[in-house]
Image 1 (spheres, rainbow, N blue to C red):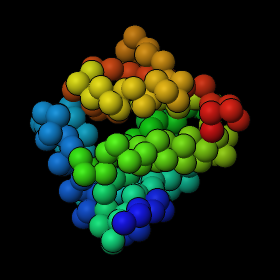
Image 2 (cartoon, rainbow, N blue to C red):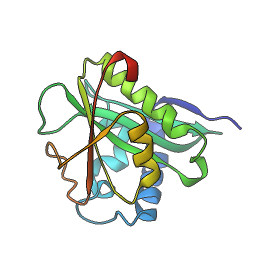
Image 3 (cartoon, rainbow, N blue to C red):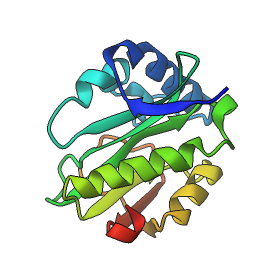
Image 4 (cartoon, rainbow, N blue to C red):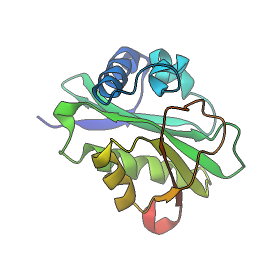
Length: 165
């Protein structure tokens, strides 16, 4: 059965929250300093409804299997967005879903006039890091902005241009 990627709808909130909690728990990324504790987890549709925000979900047979979005980097400089809440349920990994989500998010960021895309991740998320590197993200020495995610240990940046967006 084929999956589709589309903008998040209010009815997707519960499914996306479930995916985030499943994946973060799988990687031991629970507790203070991790995005699993963010208030937006239970209201992703509302959290990404603002200008300069977009969030997309992967849906198969009416069930949310993952998602990712971009938003201005809180406490960051103009022209920098953050790739946020990119999570794919285990059953959907290895099917190109992450790649397709990434392509869409980077294109949306570029269309919004964003110059650079920042992300935070964990060293233990090796497959995700490999995906990010495949799109040209490069490691940077430390965190940017004010994301509130002190539990992360890897930070990456990508210069957006037509060839990678």
